[in-house]
Length: 496
Image (cartoon, rainbow, N blue to C red; front, side, top):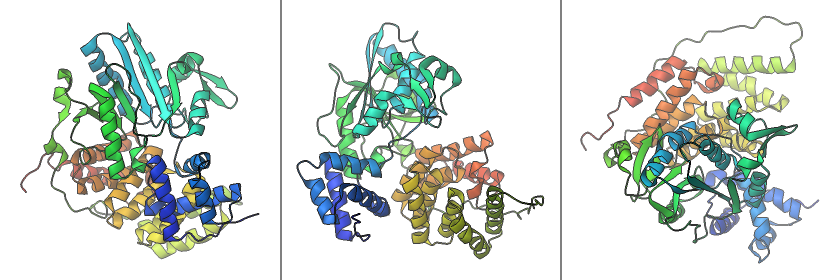
């Protein structure tokens, strides 16, 4: 078997990422070097390429487009879930669509899901609109869903999803719009007929535009996180050009336009931030957010919540005659977490390192990576996280730890990128919301920061405990107090 060299020089890394960015607009930051190297090595082995330069020549050749798309599939996350970020779908139902139909009364509702991945987003939009059938009587609905990945588009057209993907779908919707299959759930034919799927690259200069007025709504969530600022600026300008006056642009919760473009009105609806192409419909004027709310003075970022610590309580499990490997692993992780809470980091490491060698599960590796991030061992923490993300790109805690590493290094842009991905993959990570809010405050994005802290409080209200592995020895009440203290900062600038 031909095996490529494991070394990827800085010059070779730059040449590959420049090629990818030139073709798709997607930029591989330095923190994703190992992700790209692993993807390149896997595709080179598959293609039988002997060297990095040989494979680069293959990608650059006239018939290398298909292979370049296969490589892209290995370095981007093309899986999501139905009704991800519920506040945005609530805004769609209760604010955006009513504003559109109140203004025009009848016609065609044109919606574009740009970067639709495997189709969960446009089908969620279609379900939300189907539930508004009475309000939309007399209207035609046109939903276009596009993605750069031909493989993702094919999966979206099939419309078959496993249990994990539909976990956010209410049971009533499953019964009305899906058919149960042995391998999961299939979108029903009627709903599938409401969405048109096409392959499209946002790096292309000519964007689709329905006639005569343009799109009413464009969803492009968690796509620009892969772009550099200049590419994002170009994409947003094309979106604006193809939106009708008064149309809406919906981005991911960590993507913000105020530093990119000032040609949109900013609206907060149902807890979601939405961008409107002027002029703003009169009913939405009271939801408008001003520049003063978006550009507060920047406080210095902190390393973590400034609250008092409490003495940890040691709980010894009842003795067992022959504990199972799973039980033994859980006991070891609990002892390591107790040691972290007591600031006995060396003891925690002595527990976790052998466990990582013995177990193939993610939890011990996550805890070791988190411990090393807390100790400032950036390279070791990053390597463990990248190894885990190569197996599961939607492992939220691994993205969280990379965000924590970037936060402590003062790289606020990279921090926000990873923490946003962590929340996207696992919406229950309280510390991810907190540190994202800290980074957003430091980047002078107060509105986004307040949403992040409120997001943490919402998770705390739900009472979930899956995030407690990363609580840093603090109680949920202390995390709540830290978020409330952050939210107490005035919402408008005071002084210079």
